[in-house]
Length: 590
Image 1 (tube, rainbow, N blue to C red):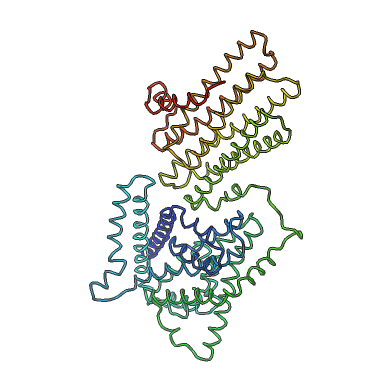
Image 2 (image 1 turned 45 degrees about the horizontal axis):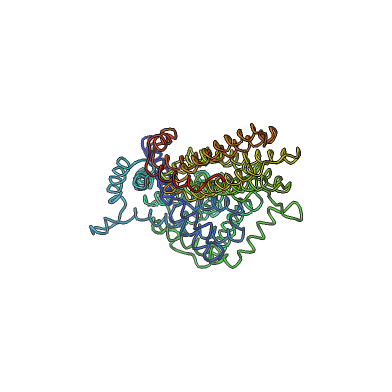
């Protein structure tokens, strides 16, 4: 092989790896986070977990991605270590599907229908369809993502054909065939397979490279088998790297993956070569083909799962011994589960990460709502316990904003669907408003404390008016959180009319208070505190309006809050005017 042959082989390898990576990313995006949600919820039964692990891996074409996801689940507390074992075993089975797809490249037949099964025959068609979808589909749509998957597969297969064509002349090269023969030594073959897979961090890709070499007819089964065994060990590197800096259980999950493959490989190698010592398998000298590699890969992984499945608990104990507890009691995290779930490992599954962010944002909204409702109760009936709870909730909401905001910014740099892009924009806008709502809840409790410490009280009329306004504020916070949690653009327009009614009630209360102040019925000190209360109420309703308007505008692809408010309020929108008049007749000051 001359320099041009080497360059061709390198180019083919680059296309193969790029195609596999592109296809895998597209499949993950196409799943829209649904597979991860299924994996998260349906793993209580270990057999079900194994089947789900196999299904998810077969779908996204990457056992490494599935295992890293499991490490993330365990690290976040979403999945128990005992549940992770089944998924990890299933992932090894699911990854064998890739080798079967790639084995189609070795089909040889004169029959036209059989020839159509050969990737070199149908890949150009898939590439043509893929490029059409890619060029005509809008960003973030499933059509464009499907185009990426089809094009990735076509590039992968073209790279594989290029590699096999480039190495084909080497079958007559004594030095090259001698090097491959050396890999028939089980230790050398395993080391080579493990090293290759550890470098490219994909067992599917390394098996594909081996299959491409087999198409040239220079690899024997004696050389291929140890390499395949080593590939299963090398694929554990990705999970081990991912577990660095994670919780103890996450590191244990990575070690379960390592021990499963390591023990399975050692058992297979000992049994296989012990039998071979007496029986002398003649097929080891035969040239391996792509289909044969797929068969060996599948039998090994299915066999490992079958043999080690009854010993799953033992694998957990072995991993626990490897990563022991430093103290007798397991450390307990004070972090809210919704925030713990925001593990950076999930950034590689953007659709699922987006759902985790939504869960965290919903909890943040609930905490903000709880804070404002408690603050309203404190205004009505003073309670130091409730004040302390409002302060705790406000600090919790602040923490949610910090963690969730940082995670959303990182997620913004990933490939997201159009719907997820909309959701991300809504969350980035809304979490700031909910944080400010919790701040106003603290402000309200401070006003209540001042009244209590100074022995001040509102007049009976003023208290009745404030109670009426409080009902409207309660209703708008309930409506806003419901609209936000359901992303309900249909009922989001109902928030703005109520916000306008609250503004009107606040203005009317201020005017009434001035009248009472002038007549000497109300004291100046109590009046200043009431002014602060009314200002906080008005701003709470403003933030509720911001959340609702953001949902409407972003989902309609036209983010211009001021324009929307001008059209609704100044433009005399019929729905807005009708709803405003209806609510105005409901919320009336006594």
